[in-house]
Length: 293
Image (cartoon, rainbow, N blue to C red; front, side, top):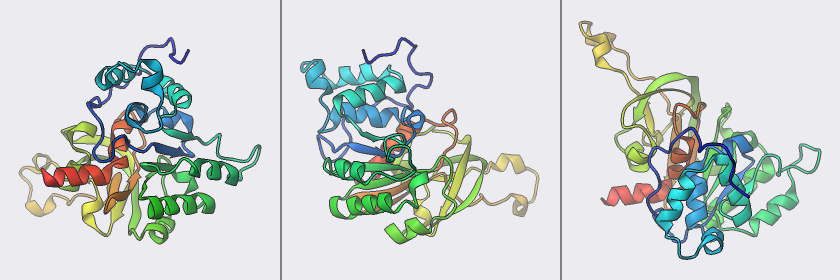
């Protein structure tokens, strides 16, 4: 009923999930707020994690209570994004309030009743917000309340870019600014980038990708840096090799047990949306675990 007849999704996960996330278990669900369905279908790691490990999910007990978590992970890994969304709606994994669900009928007004209905399902592990709603007062107030009262992490998914970040500065005290929309050769930063994303979410080598690049006044919050290959400048004076351009397509501001993150990648064929978004939803937890190792 819930599985499509098409072949498994084209893009394999960078590395399949092999167990529960760090921290609370079972974990709180992720709320996907205002995300278009076609983008939500790319968030495989997030959807799979919540179907198996979220406190709200009824999948395992209704499918087969004797099925091990590992067996269930392997089954879900081979499903398409569309299948995962259908399972999520049927068995209450991630909480979905996609872009078609968030408005009052036939208007561009965000439904206060929908937000009130969703708030009853709190707390959430993370709220993933589409960048279109950065300046929507009701959604911003909802996310800030969840962040302050419940310790919910917030991830802004900025496929289309956030050109004015003053709302984020006012809401969370972060100092981020859009620096460029371009293609660059990038690699993980040696510190926080490796701690939060590591080998599970991103290529171990540098990658050429198109994205919205954002700078932070706190440089350690930038998870990627431009990769400038010195071999491209062999035989030239050292001062002719350019410094890396400023900005990163993903950032994470760690605030105790919660975080505010930014995701600015444009092309899902360059990177795995799901793997990176999953780690950003648990950024504070992964950062803490890796620091202790």
